Image (cartoon, rainbow, N blue to C red):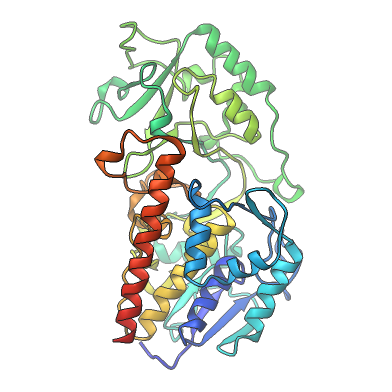
Length: 451
């Protein structure tokens, strides 16, 4: 790899800005490409870098008891530009980190523009970068320009750049009441116990269907209203509206399952399928939804076995573009089919501003180390950075991969002696382990760089 050539970063959102900043701080020249200023997207309103589209909140800042707050702390440890600007422009929001939207974006833009190793080029990259760009980070987000999206899809050789408009909720396994639910695959196929099954009787089912139909739904933005549903990925409330029995012959069908508590078949069943390699997260099969978040929590906790469910992610409907990263990316976020291309941010399948920035920072560090001829070990999977990276690049099931926020369900389990510790005390053990392991990793990286 030619060390005199710059790394090209495509996209000036949070991930692209963070990647460019990390490269420059390592002494590597960067060309940052951003089409806004010459061409608008359907969601953005300015030409500034790191523009916040959906919210001004970076969510919880409590690092000891919240995985996103822990990711905040780790970003600060690694010199994140996004966190530096967020802290400088924060506004009152209780335990959350919320920012003045315009001030934050302006601060990121000014920092990028003032950095002598970053050259800004305005213009759309409509196809795969030319071959003489030997190191590229694609950080184009969920609104990747159609021409570039098609070029990436063609290069992968399959329909792996997916457009999903429906996402199902994910539940922490240890919050499921297994005295009411049971493990079994339909007709005992596979390993015979691959699903968690939550039974409903006739009254419970009918009340649940009525709740789905009556529940308050999220309104689409004007530019989203023309996006069609995929027939194989319909929101569960849309299925319910087609008839009271539709779900019993669809995702909630009870056939092939025997409730050990009764020895017979339930009237309807909600199935949850393992969602990550650690077995700590379970996906509610067929439960993609556009119900508002509060409605989801209220309604889904009426399901037997899920009365105290804790959700790693709630369901949603929105237009999105992302790679099937567990299948297509290696452990350093490089496209296996063409390793000169790295991907960062939401296009890799992370959800949220903070997660996007974190993957951008990692991509920048990986690309910088490669340019400088150094080895860059990935952060330990016990850290928030490492847990996200491991999930994207192999921990998630490639067949059912969908975008994910940072949560403690992605972290390797604690030691056996910690199993009886619950609630916030348990989260603190995860968080303190992560901070110690990240500090050790950073020290090791500094020693190698100085050698």
